[in-house]
Image 1 (tube, chains in turn blue, red):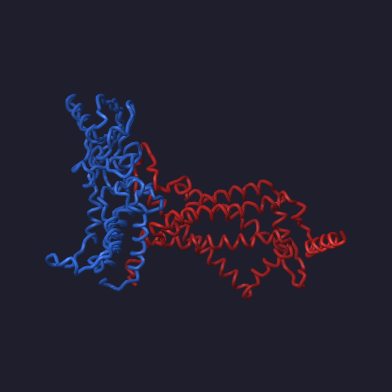
Image 2: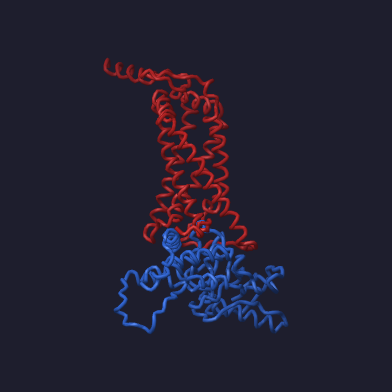
Length: 250
Length: 256
């Protein structure tokens, strides 16, 4: 099949970018979207050009590295999958596909479609972990966790930190990511010790990174490859409000 | 309380937007209920207006007006702040913007909250000039059946709406915009306050839209009906005109 592409090309962080037209023939329907881009790059290199820079690692939807805005939707219109899980069979022969990077001030473009997501790492460094010394693994039965709580914690922890929520949000807000990361610990006994400092610290860092305010569009949930619910954002707000009134050291 | 964290963070701003927004919706519900007394005639409507202005020796209305003003200011401030952060957070826009669909609640209503909010603010200014800051002395008074004297607000409302169809159109358009604002605003306030669960989000979203439509239709109807039903809404209606009309009707029915 033949695919027409409009790809965002930008040589460096401060260089001006623009959409460049490409056309590629002989694409197999069973190829993944990233394999299609690999094929394109081989062609570009053969022609002596500069290949399109894009990021990927696991190519099985768990690492959160690949993130492209395909036809205006983060990770493409299929939903509930990462860019690497998009197959070329979801396009028609002769389709024109627009590919842009995730756009947010807090995710500066490094080159072409590659962005710097270290803002997420800095948010995680403000509380996205359990700092108390837990020693070696203890008997599992010592820490009873309700089945529903375990399920809810896992639903939040399914976040792979890809940043599609930021890319999809009309305000470039990171609320779904931060909501999920705060939420996953609220359900578990290990998360209770730093519950308040976590909520306050991570929200403060989110604001400092320059992400936008949330307007409850819920577009993030729709774009999330792991289908993380905006109920996590609601929970983040409850945690934050409780933390405002909490004593120090909790 | 941790005072250092009281600087308005993005989450705190949402809490303020939600609290003030929901409070303003409660005000709208009370305001609509009050407006509907227009249909009961001048006696009831003027008595209601007089009650509002004399309740707690006039302290109630002053307290309520001050509260509304404060809530409006906070709501507008947080709304503008969200808009500004949005522009800063995404300096380069997408060449092609799509919709992810599915559970997304992104709509023309949710995307244009600042515009609809601005139009509502303009409407509120016009509305206050029309009624609150109208020349109440010139409009005259009405002696109610219990002997108390009330400003004839009924006459003011009827004259204002029957005097200009353009104004009626403006009110109706403003209520359509209010409907749009609330279609996203009501459910969004619950989400902003952290008062949602995965299971309640679809219910609150649907209920918010229903309340928005009900409120807008209620407010929408009054100016239109006052304009069209000139026989029913008479600026010079006497205090007991409606009561007398009802008695006459009853007598004619009894006489057969």
